[in-house]
Image (cartoon, rainbow over all chains, first blue to last red; front, side, top):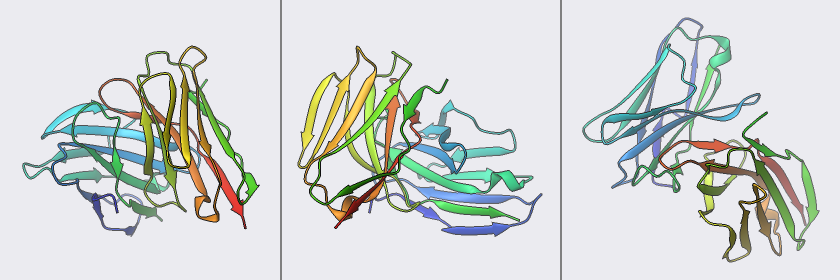
Amino acid sequence: DSGVTQTPKHLITATGQRVTLRCSPRSGDLSVYWYQQSLDQGLQFLIQYYNGEERAKGNILERFSAQQFPDLHSELNLSSLELGDSALYFCASSLNTRGETQYFGPGTRLLVL
Amino acid sequence: QKEVEQDPGPLSVPEGAIVSLNCTYSNSAFQYFMWYRQYSRKGPELLMYTYSSGNKEDGRFTAQVDKSSKYISLFIRDSQPSDSATYLCAMALSGSRLTFGEGTQLTVNP
């Protein structure tokens, strides 16, 4: 158990809908990272927050957004969902911003029908 | 060309074998090098990380980095069936995102 929690574990929804994925980092970790894992793209970095502030952006679609709250938990919002958004979404956390020790949560498996 | 290349396998070995997993990379600015293990689409588990050329050992695992050749390896000694998983190499510039290889699927047969 990495200490990172993610909810929900599974999500099934329809195209065009909006969903919110939630992540709680390990106790004491200030950085939260979101990654998407699909069969054809592998693990791709989406976005990073550090202590409430956006720190870095990767290949995140405009339909996706995220935020980190004062209690350091983070939410990833996916809207106008498409079939191709079906994937595993992982959250990771680390103590600092260097990123060399990121601990991953169990993931949320999203299926868009 | 991908920044990180990893042979996807699959790799099948008998129990007790020495396993060698490898990645090459093109971005010489990468500073941190990690290996993760992922069991059947669960969250990746950090095995080892290093930031310098050379070897780092942890139990049955040895991570090797050769920055001059842009090549990293993970060696698993005395492999066990419980080591069967997908192994992902990952790299980072100073400051944040990890860039992952495709992952190598390893099966250790009893």
